[in-house]
Image (cartoon, rainbow, N blue to C red; front, top):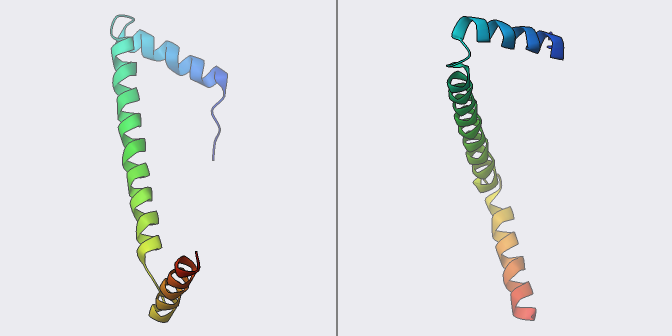
Length: 78
């Protein structure tokens, strides 16, 4: 995958300022930032839901039953 260095970013910013204009450039940056933020939140939400789903899935019902019994025994011993 190609990497973008500081010099390439500087060239992109200069070209963007020339094309968009210095007056509207901060507005465009704000809008792009909000898009990136909402995209990150969206994927983070999906990742959290998948993690929760994986935790809720139990492969062996007997394992689940034995874990609950172990918790009850430990709670009764306290």
